[in-house]
Length: 289
Image (cartoon, rainbow, N blue to C red; front, side):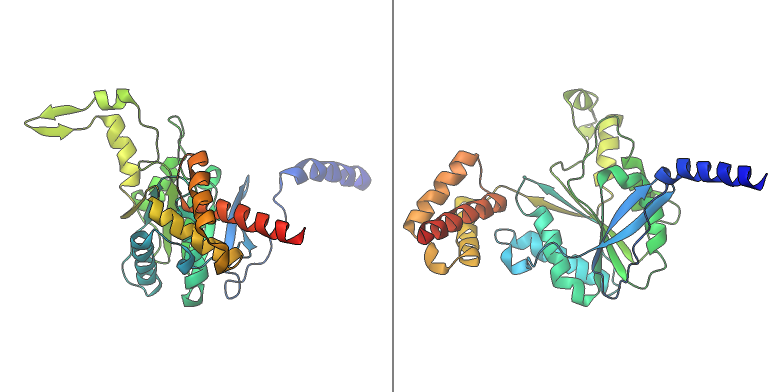
């Protein structure tokens, strides 16, 4: 009888085990600066991760206004002063995600801790925030490349945590998000057709109001635009000096940088980094042969 029961329990455990989360790694916020939130069927867990790189705030050129605003907002938060959730939106490759990474590298000594949440795991955001509520540290919960499809209800969890729940987010948690879309949801012509003019006032339809309501919950909006040619070339020069040497920048490099951006169809910090990698790498390769 006991052997049969033991076999049945063993069979049950073999069936259940694939659904169990992996053993969680211990996280020590005194030493761990960042973590990933991984949602699973029974909730979620924090997995500590090392910083991706040593990117500094000084490495980010062409976005001085955005950089200053986000640093000031985060420093106010770290010192216990009022601060806003932040939405960084705009052109691809213009430094939105890089700014958040550099922010962690620069302000971690002042107490900043970062938790990244994938868009597909946003349904577990209330559980994550509840877990962080009683921690003695201050956290920026960060979602990169945030956007939702028209039939995607995951944004409701984000809305609730930002402003909609009875308790609201705790004092030690801010939400930062990056997106190519200002309103995070796709906008169609049919949405605008519901807009009406009443007594010279513009009244949006319900669909537009619903889409605006999410981004409105971020108190700090930072717009990122394509680089001017001067800003792009300055960034190319910076990264070439960083990856190689200052003398690697020359009139020839400048002309090639312009050509590289033209072929890529735009100018951005990302394209400047990619050009610098190509230019310095090719020069070093030729020097070896």
